[in-house]
Image (cartoon, rainbow, N blue to C red; front, side, top):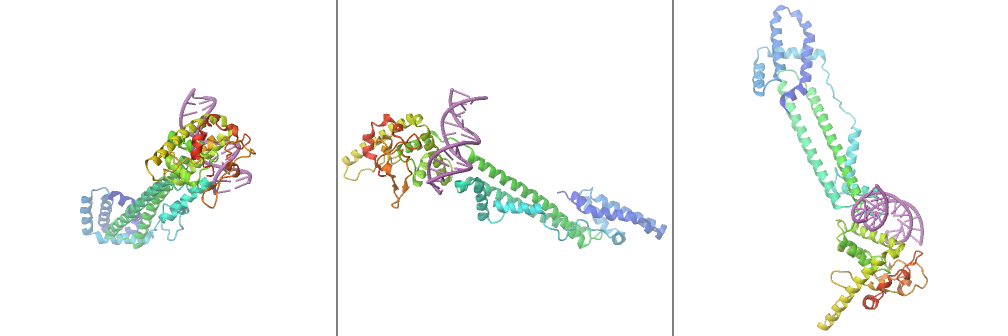
Length: 422
DNA sequence: TCTTATGATTCCTG
DNA sequence: CAGGAATCATAAGA
């Protein structure tokens, strides 16, 4: 800020009051007679010069200031100004000694604390994340702890603190500057410590209002970030073709029990390269996919028949390749054959026989979810143990819905991988 | 612009 | 709490 303007805006108020006070009091000085006229003229000149200082360049002003300080009438002017000041009882405006904290500022501070922008980094941040998770509700509680969100929040936090520091520094510098100016001026006119204090108060209030703006815009930024982040989660993006293939491959190869375990979900998420940085979130997406798939498959089995055939054929091919590899292995060396992995890049199709099983349903009930037993292996519901793999029309798995055209490779694939005791 | 496909969300149940 | 069912919202294609 330009020094002239500082003088005008901050010091000018006091100065002009003193000057105007002097004009108002002029008649009271009249009694001193006409011999005082010359002195009054001199004082008028000095006042005029003081007022003129603000319109001049720094060097000029310095020179004039020096001139004023050495002026023969300076002590007289000083005493006159003291007298004026005493008589007018110059009020110190805008001093609110123990003013209550601004409620809006308090709100903003609380908000920034809750959002994790101010206050301790870790606790505040996760508090905000938890709050955002609560807004989402349900199982997505952990998934919101998204690194992107955290990174952006950290960025906002950093900017906020940098700016805050800058403002504080500027405030201190400016205060010091004004205090120096006032001290300098106190050589020419009477300035009480109270006035300096008042001026400092004005400056601090001015800067705290700027700080409030900073806090306000920081809050807005966090709000925007949050809403964008939540929107991004709600916004649907189709999986890649490759990802869908991986998921379908698993689904149709586990048709009797299309409920991937947590480990399987994790593996699927990795294989699908689901582009979210948080594993829990990726697993949630896999769960969503399987949930949708199960429901939609069940609702319209005939529609999915072609797809099922396709993946059955694929599975048969990979199974056959695995057999060939196993045979090759056992012939090549005495070392144990490669386990039941269809290929290095695909899943262990331990239930690949599922889609080929054609054993009729015994009671037509709906399939049951496999519950992990205490051995860590999924326990097969009774109906599945006997090979029931198809869904009933009335909400259960039905044999008729099994892709009929894929039963032929059943022996080949099933004989190798049909560990239906899985 | 309309329809279909599909990922996500919500509510409910066992 | 996982999963079923219904529904929403949007991407993708005709």
